[in-house]
Amino acid sequence: MSATLAVLLGPSGSGKSTFAAAHYRPHQVYSLDWLRAVAADDECDQDATADALTLLTAILHTRLARRLTTVVDATSTSVADRAWLLAIAAEHQVPAVAVVVTADLRVCLARQAARPGPTPGRRWGRAVPAAVVTRQHADTHAALATLHTEGFAQVTEIGSPLPGSPVGTEIHYQTYCAATDTAGTATLTVAHTVDSLDEADRLAADHARSDVDVHVTAVIRPDGRDLVQEWEHTHADVL
Image 1 (cartoon, rainbow, N blue to C red):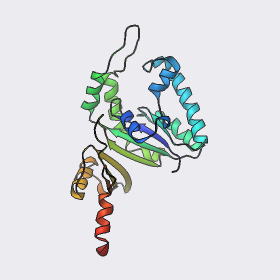
Image 2: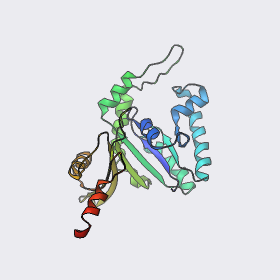
Image 3: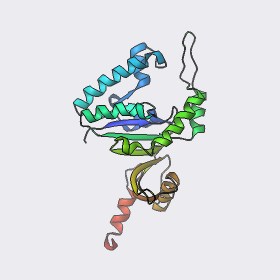
Image 4: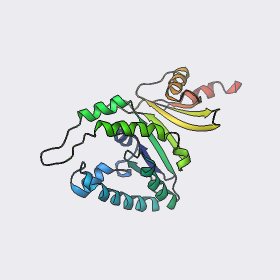
């Protein structure tokens, strides 16, 4: 498999780390929280963010020079957050892909409310202020319209994975907007098993914007079966 720089994108509490743990090897994933802990023995220490970014920069250059797939687990909701990552990927001629983890704002806020505040003697806790999460959520949805033009070779949007849920079905679909003559690709991950192409079509259409046409290209169940591939095989004589 060709090396990529995968940039996870989404508000705090959307499920990015859960997704990364389910889809990548531990040594491929680098989060700012973990690098803050490396730099300062405290993943919540915002004063250590600059040092964490220095470490991340060195890791990216080292791994991409060796053409190793590397995942950045951070919110990355602003253009500036993503631009320097794209520049490093371009320097090493490694394609960058964006994985946008979307979740209902209420879910993100509820997860933050359940996270602990600062421990005694510490300035920061794991909980992110509601105003910050709300802004990140809005910026995430705004980014969906610009990620391809920013330089990402592929953009995948997934639903928020719930901790402890089964991997579920991945619905891959293509979109086309006649008003802007633009096409794109996306992936929707649902926690339950999809049993029919009609159900997959409905879920993909519900997930996409209302002004685009949706064409489902693959429906991959937890057991690895692709319902689209099976349908095409069964109907090969009429295709």
